[in-house]
Amino acid sequence: MTFTFTRDLDSKRYLLRPRGSDPLHVRRGAPDGRPPPEGCKPRFVIAADAAGASPLAVVVRKGDRRLAVLTSDHELLAELLLPPRKTRWRRPYEIHLPDGTVLRGREGTVPSLLLCAVLLPLVLLYLVGLALSDMPAASIGAPLRTAWKRQGASIARAVMTESVRGRFRVRDDGLDHRVAYAQAVAKYWKG
Image 1 (cartoon, rainbow, N blue to C red):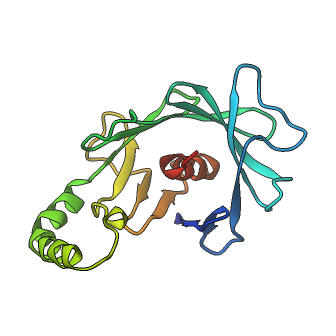
Image 2 (cartoon, one colour):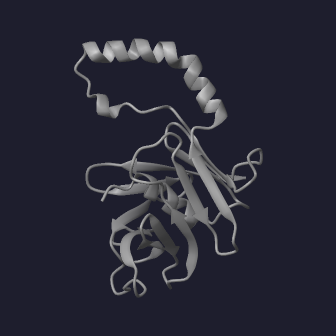
């Protein structure tokens, strides 16, 4: 059985919507009354309520491009390694679990790249139509999925995937859901 959730961004808050559950709220900073560990800067909190009183995970910055996913008691769940700020083809995302397992995700799986190549003529027609209209070009992105797999296992089944529409799927045996939530937010978090 897989666990599916989507991210929902509106102008005032960031939500994660697990299928069949209440939405989870993402807040900037650390939870009230629980300062982050020494030497870590608070980044965001994933909580069951909008006030952040019952945090599921606390994400703190450990260094340049490194985020630590902690429980509310500051127990390490995982470390997230974000890609360099400069946009690059097939940006790498990594999740380092406490047991030493490394999950690596790259934007653009082979099926999504093939689909993109097949649909390229239609996309070019769409872009011509876009140039003739007044729609903002910043809202256009490449239709690529991301799949997180164990390091060195390129053919193995993905532990977590993100679809083109922003839906994340996590296998029950592969990854703690709190780490998956943190990775989904960290990939798109601005601020």
